[in-house]
Length: 327
Image (cartoon, rainbow, N blue to C red):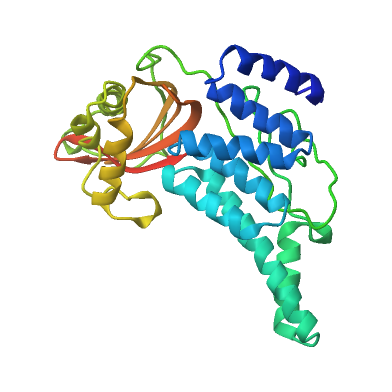
């Protein structure tokens, strides 16, 4: 598929599915290949089936939305992206694609307004702004990249990383973002020591004002590893206890609803393994920003994602204040 041999890729993935019809990753890949072959209805059928079988997975909804957008079925695309975000509130790809979709829908609305009233200066100015945002000629900027493990569905994306620009007819619908389904590490928590990024120097403080930096960094890494370990052993109580009272719920929902959603996902049948690698800690007083690679492995999903946790020291413990997908 990376070599552009999509027909051959389809034959090979069909062989995989014949040997194991329940292999969701192979079926997901088939949907990607079908989309690359511009067999969009068939690709949409594959992703739709995956959303029915595993409604907790955000990636099939995202790719289904991109197909709908290419077919200019914008209401369906919006619904699919909203479902993707509902299953995974921190899935940045779906949020970005939803923004691109709203931009495209806004362009259509302003175009209609100008068809009705060609002298509408406000609509003209807003339409020009949207076109400037989306690139020369009114085409959305193709910002997607390809992963060695998987790929997104838009034909405008490049096959390798970094991406190479590819021409497309104007206007182009929502650019797809990469959907990464990579093999997870077998260990529960990676033991690689954290790489500490020291903040800018501050005026000297008395030793009694706060723990030594090395001690704080050790405590922070232990707190993050304990969070991942509780998740891996499906200890919901221990997992939720890692989040502070001031935790910012993704999407601005209620803390109670978020905890109920997390408990439902963690309590599902089957084992979970969460491994962390390339941990980096940036300490600033009682706040620590921790960046790492998160490898998630369950019965239905294998992903490798860059994550960021912001922790605060509260009552002698380091607790999570923010959780987001990294860049």
